[in-house]
Image (cartoon, rainbow, N blue to C red; front, top):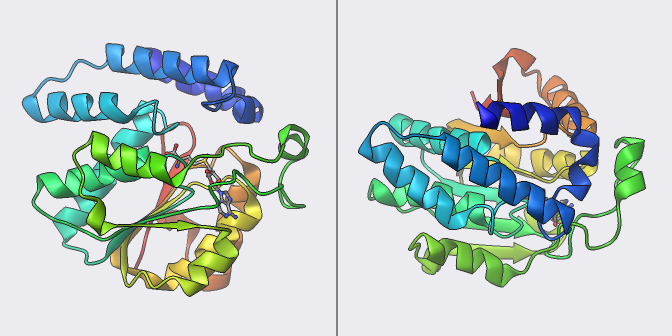
Length: 258
Ligand SMILES: C[S@@+](CC[C@H](N)C(=O)[O-])C[C@H]1O[C@@H](n2cnc3c(N)ncnc32)[C@H](O)[C@@H]1O
């Protein structure tokens, strides 16, 4: 219930999102409160959920700014990949401090599956928004917004007992790092890069690598209009129906790779 209300508030105030990120003073407080309230509100009815709640509490909000709904949706996505037996790596573009990637890895390891993990991020924060992004993005942008350190990603994995030998951290701008990094087939792709051009780069360079039956998660689909436009344009170019997108929570969407 509280989770739902906070989700709605966040959607209504999505233009304030850039001030509501950890590390931004007021953002830290808001995100901590939101996660505390959501965890408090969640009464797991079975052991599996109790273990999941404990895992989420270990990484959020310190290592991820995703809310509880989105994290639980990612867990469901990971379980779906396991159920379908889709081969390939887990890739996050826009890993920030790595908590979301660590949680997905944790789901796989609990089922004795170990996948290659790739964390792509500039580790210098977001690039400036472009013409495909709303004026509010340009207004609130400053260099270093949403920056993290590669060591944070390692700490996030360690917080959930993850092995770092499966992890490749790729620092740099996506338009340069994605084409030159050999990821192999991708089973699960998390796209959390906010701006139009960043989402467009991810799709152009990685969509072909996503295995049949694999899943792509767009965290900003209904939150940043530039992300929404980049996804729609790409799907249109590829002749993929928009109906293949499934919305989750207040902002995210999943794409099933045919
Ligand atoms: C909203 S944060 C990601 C949050 C993270 N997924 C989590 O779980 O909390 C967006 C991240 O995308 C990265 N980013 C956005 N565009 C990028 C680009 N073109 N190249 C590299 N990194 C980019 C930023 O550095 C930032 O860390």
